Image (cartoon, rainbow, N blue to C red; front, top):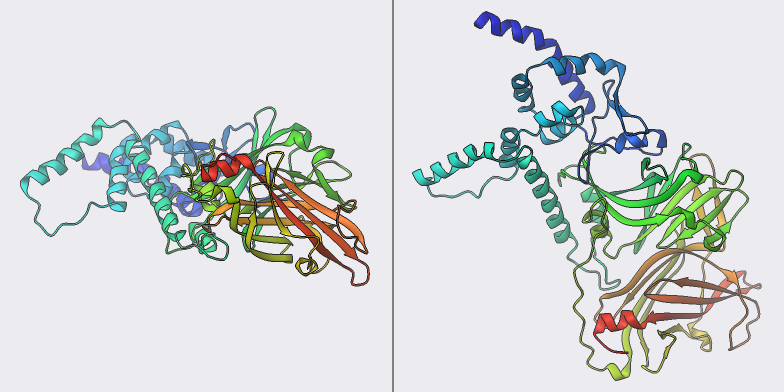
Length: 519
């Protein structure tokens, strides 16, 4: 028996070494990032569990996946795969018992047999118990408790395969959610938004990805290439050389990407199992003249609500870059607490009782920024805004921020207004366009209406009021909750824009829902 056991071990020793090298080469990593190379996008699209993306990445033995979604192994990993398939299940289970959770998820992506073996409940209950030990007690464990523990171990066989794996992943995600909620508790009285949003983004390893879907059903996943954090928003950018053909695309999904297993005391590695949280789904058929925002000699840019900017090359009419503008309000929750198919739903709003509805709205605060590429053209804060109940027209309440008849309220824009864009080979700036961030706080200092979106200045006729010496321009934004109208005048003498009017139009439905009123 001893001789036979030694012969078996010698036969499989080479495969064990190959497997160990493969795991070390991959670094125990999770789903391979697509990055700007769309040709590898499908490699990150293999789904081992709902909303959890995972694949073996790195090294010569890395797995690959063709655009049709079918797995294929590299030539250098073929012999290792054959040896693994020939090994008895008992030996493989023994090997798997020494792996961590990330490595087990990666192994489960190789083939059906290894997937089922990597779901072994005895392996996962050990990982679960190590990560989430029961509460310690100073009392000595008595016979009854020892019996209960042994019974719980025996009941492992009664659970369906993969039960403790799912329990472990579920609890890890719940732990991440609880930690993020704790970090986001402090609120900045200046903006009404969480003070530590930037810290939460850094600690959680949160990123963003776009999923381009063809009409045939094929998907291309791209993780963000660059991002910039502003005062109340974050701008995320995607670009590359190998975009899929625009004519074949139907939709674009914007998702937050969060590591499933997060160590808050170490920098999260890039290639680990990720949790996808759908933020918004966009229809690419809406890239028409009506949504075109501006252009320069190289690209045309289109705005899809909410907050997405799509750049197309002028000559080829193909994708050049994608830019998403995300407001800080509920940003971390929207990017991490949803699922791959369902966006995050905030908790139901309890209406604030308006003790004086006959006087209209009062005590509002507005924080508004105009910026692009890290350059701010306007950063304004307005206090004690109010409007009377009688200022209701066409389903909106008019809230005047800057009055065209009061000269001291007029504000200049700093610098040359333009929206900066770039790709891996070219860059440029589209004049008269920028990003507008709006944060409107109610009388209790709570965020009432927030958005971040590209906008464009367009030539306009002066409204009824004072006649200004200069050409008049306007900036307009509209969504389901309200409208923003800005009037500007170009002063030739000083070569700068002046904001002479800024008016918000708030939806009556939004106000009634927020305060429980019946305007």
